[in-house]
Length: 90
Image 1 (cartoon, helix red, strand yellow):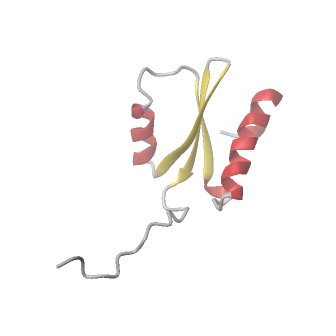
Image 2: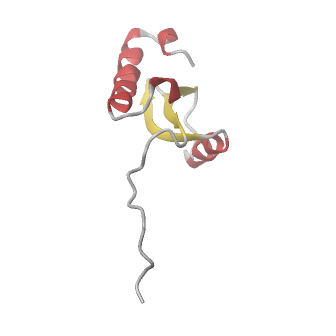
């Protein structure tokens, strides 16, 4: 969804979340906001659905009874995991 189409109060909150993500190294073009008019009993359904579309959920917001999910394209950010160059323990 286009963030500019949100009301001013909601837009400011969502923009702040996006700003935090981009300042941590995620490119702005890889951030997407999804709007759900109702809050499901299990958020996991949304997480799974977005995962199949190649997104990872970065933040969830509930504002005035509406769920906003901020997600990033999977693989956009380095997870800074240690690479195992050794052969393991004998």
